[in-house]
Length: 407
Image (cartoon, rainbow, N blue to C red; front, side, top):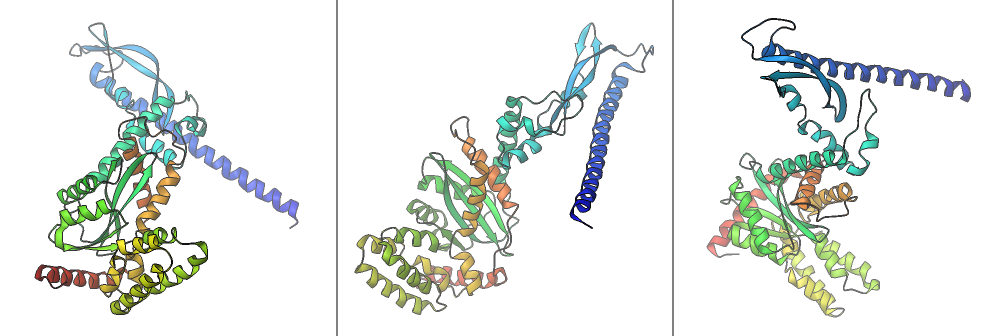
């Protein structure tokens, strides 16, 4: 078959597929319209009785019809709305009232918004259907607000008692001039779950404490040890100590700390630092890692004092997972907040078209919750999750040692 014959055959197939899709779509639209008319007729029978009937027990009567519209598949569709009267006054049909509920289009609007479509550009994306009169931008915005409020409620009210969490990752992300602190949990089965979020001006310790206390209220057990994986926030570290006391083990994110240190070093030192940093966190033996850490302290002390201070600020909390003798694959998964930062990257792509972060109450928190729940749908089990029971045993040992004053 030559190229022209191939293109012609392909076009035939493409045209047939398009025709089939149009037939299916048309029948679906007709089915929706027929269903709505059936619902109207059921309500009319209940209120008014049979058409042209003489049921004296009925106080309502038919009064023709008016132009109206309902939402079907996220589109405003023109219909004939039956009129009913009682004592000379119009009575609103329950069916018609229910079909005005914007919750019907929430899922579709939410999907478009999370795909990076602004409400301003939503209307051109709607498929043209018979009788379509379009959607007002204000209606679309209201629909998204209602849907995003639902997302915020979901992420902050989930029942956590049904899950056996081993690790909690916490990090902050900026939306405009606002900060959202987000907690992500890792279960014993290696599943990742968004636990909750709080919005504030900064990542202050009261905000973090409020987030943790909310998690506990919703079922996060406070009587068991967790591995907290965090960035370098002092406020977050303080909140962990206040709320979880001695049962908390902290792993400082190796990626955050690496970026913080390297910004103080001259470019010609970057390659050597990264080599040393990778070597330091590649040890399986904690004592060997401590010796390498001491060498790194000595090396940085001769190069840049600010870089040294940045390293010492974290102490040896970037080595916590090595101290716990966690196998290499699992150690890599728990040594940084990469899982939660990956969710942030998805979130930022979703909201990149939002320019004004001050246009409504809880706007930042609503968008953050909605986009993070979208990111959650792509979560996979963490690598090395089969060894999580080993981490649980190590956490129990550490908790006992702290209580006995050994550690």
